[in-house]
Image (cartoon, rainbow, N blue to C red; front, side, top):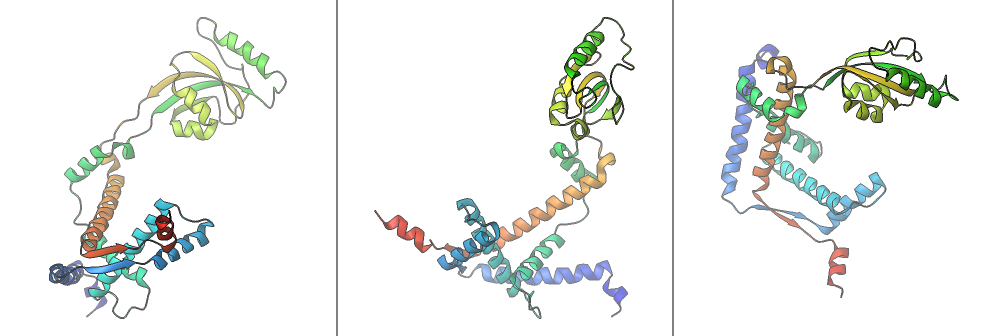
Length: 286
């Protein structure tokens, strides 16, 4: 059989179908039997806790320990099911590799390409992931903390009184040169934060349009700001963000498929989690 033939999508689909048929056929045969037992022994729990402590230099809390136990159970379920399906044949890698094979299988079961209706619905139900940021256009008069270390307060008050005068104010030459310029057009809140800092961005986000306001402090010095335009963010059309929506949709489907497969397989097992000896002794003592 040639390499080209092995790469044919139809042949790959048929091969995958055969594996899935065998796996679910096996599941059907065993579902009527008494569930296999997975015992998470006290010594196993102690080992999980010790491994966590070696990595993080502290003992796990209750929530973290429960997460370690659940992850061990997940490993065991996928390992047993993968081995039962023959996925470990001629493979000497540890159980995590078998679990990965089972999860790769779930990825392949994620389904066909999404339709426009599915992508549109996903976009509408997850607007926070795709909404564009607000856009802000403003001018500034900058008072440098470096150049005016001894006079910045008095100079700022003088500039404030000039900018507060009635009528149009020519702010040219009032302040100091700013490395990125005096005008910022169509900048997002995150961009403002990256340039001027979080405190500056929060204050400018609530300012009115059409008049000079300030000063606002930053690590550079003092800033007087004139906002000329503010455009609210919006949810874009599907055609404008199709690649990112498809990517997010596919990832969500993969995660859902893995979880559904795990839940369906885990339900076929009786899970026994033993209480560690130290805890059991503590609970028994008066």
